Image 1: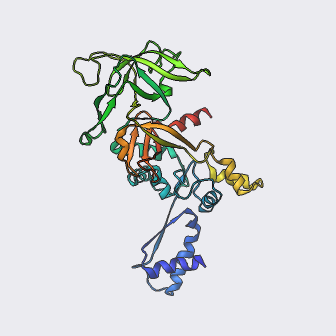
Image 2: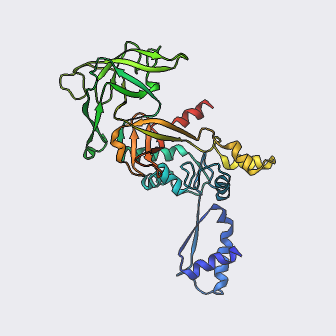
Image 3: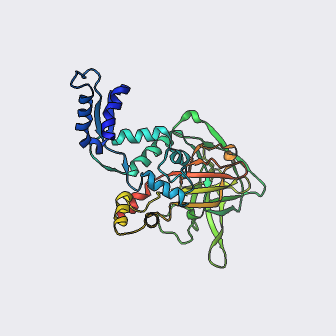
Amino acid sequence: MYDFAHGQSDFFEGVTHSLCTLEFVPHRPLYDLFIDWLKKGEDLDDNRPRQTEFNKLNLNYTLLSKRNLLALVQNGMVSGWDDPRMPTICGYRRRGYTPEAIRMFVDRIGYTKFDALNDMALMESAIREDLNRRATRVSAVINPVKLIVTNYPEGKTEELEAINNPEDPEAGTHKITFSRELWIEREDFMEDAPAKYFRLSQGREVRLKSSYIVLCTGCKKAADGTIEEVYCEYIPNTRTGESDCNRKCKGTIHWVSAAHAIKAEVRLYDRLWKVENPRDELARLREEGMDVIDALKEMKNPESLEVRENCYVEKFLADTKPMDHFQFQRIGYFCTDKDSTPEHLIFNRTVSLKDTWSKVKDKA
């Protein structure tokens, strides 16, 4: 009945080009035949619909079947249709993907008649390129440890200039506050560091982005060996932009002032599935007799969402609105979640700065 109605509906509605996916290729003779029968051989060349087939947009690490996506929602395996891990328009929007990036991705892969499995890394590359041009650069610390500048006066603060976007000269700057106690990433300090570790370590220098060069002097550890505080001394006359500063160092790390930062929740989203082709893997598991829900649970990536509640962002983000785009320097691109409030800021990771999944695949 569908084959019978397809061509005739197109003809009556004035459709000139019927664009279909590849499974309609063997149906095209019927499409044309029923249009011929419609007018019993009359000349239809002036307004005959033409069916053209193209490949579906298949992505690795992505399951597009609406039936299976519905099962995810109904069984609470995701938070809803707009869960940022879902391959839906509302899901991609909430994660921070832009229409321009999606169009860029589709233009890059092109339109063919080959049923290909496209690499999700191409889409991530497109959103990185788009957000690199538009996202404001800010400092955020998502795994904090306190850094104390021991020779900086207590109670003193400085207002420094931070560039909003080096790719856009018109984006301007904003103010950041420097003080004696700062938050830095825990990964940016190592007590016994190898030779090529260009971050904080005993006796080594590093630049605090947009501010001073500091010399690490030690740390304080808890009873279980966890680093509680890191100590350093700032070097006067090394502030970024000072004309008489000729001192160089190899490493630069980001930071936020402990007294002026805002606490935030950061959600680190990753790919929902741990298998490259979840469509075929689901079919295989079903053939082995596994229930659909159990099969979906078997394929789900347990690290697809990590929620970090004790993060700190600079005060510049106090007035952020849902869907604002930012680059958390040295971490990745983020957007403000729709549930974010001034009292409880929430940021979703759109994509990391680098393609970490290619390294995972290489190791596998």
